[in-house]
Image (cartoon, rainbow, N blue to C red):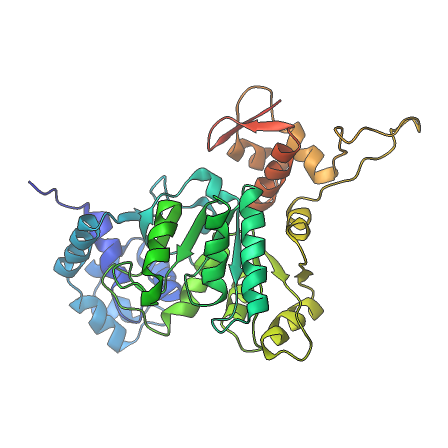
Length: 370
């Protein structure tokens, strides 16, 4: 006998299905009423007093159906698609930090704690051979370094990024602009299956919702929000990939760009980002150093011997994080609270300390000094 979905989950999906209620208006509604259930219980007059909610949206909210939401949840269940809301333990912690997180996420595959250490690679759908090669090379290198590669499953740079991570045996996450049962582009169906097998397909759109042009800029905030930083490989000056970097900057994430020929239209956006202060990326080390600087061996404090390569010196932030970790298992949340550092910076620094074999992962949420 089929189980009835949790009413809270039904309300979240129901609100996600109201056309015109995007992440910002959802945030306004929840600020006014507290929960999706309270939104649907509100009067037309009260709804109309919510910033950004006009008569047409009031009518759409009140016309929404629990039955439609239950139908999407049934379709998700039949296809092996998981449904996550913010209160779920599996909901990505990095997305909880952004000011307009998705209220509901549909997931095909597995989200792991190690995916907190992720980097996005985005760029043009009409990529050149140069761009495709660089995206695949960088994704493979990041995957070998233990980072998850995030992108959007689109043609061009996105597809190359996913393939690069998969070729290196790494993890990758694809964030879609439409429902997971309406995969786009259709020629990436096999790639999507491979991503789901070695990572996760994600969307805030209900499974049967077709992709719409307005949804792609909106989904870009999820790509950047999942990541410690975003790398743009090729992008024209008005490329949609640059929307992702705007979200990244607003979310306090790092922005990287791969330079290209000055006479290439598809490199104009990247070159402009570098002029405006984005970190120039020529190799994977450029990314790793920015996320958690790797220091060279230095003289000892007494001016004597130079430390061996195995005794890499730590910068101030790395020392701060290391001192907050005990030899016994220590919660990462405790390290964040003790240091007062942003979660992405702590996670990036932990990755560096792990590479230096100064700390070890006990579990997805626990670390210990070696």
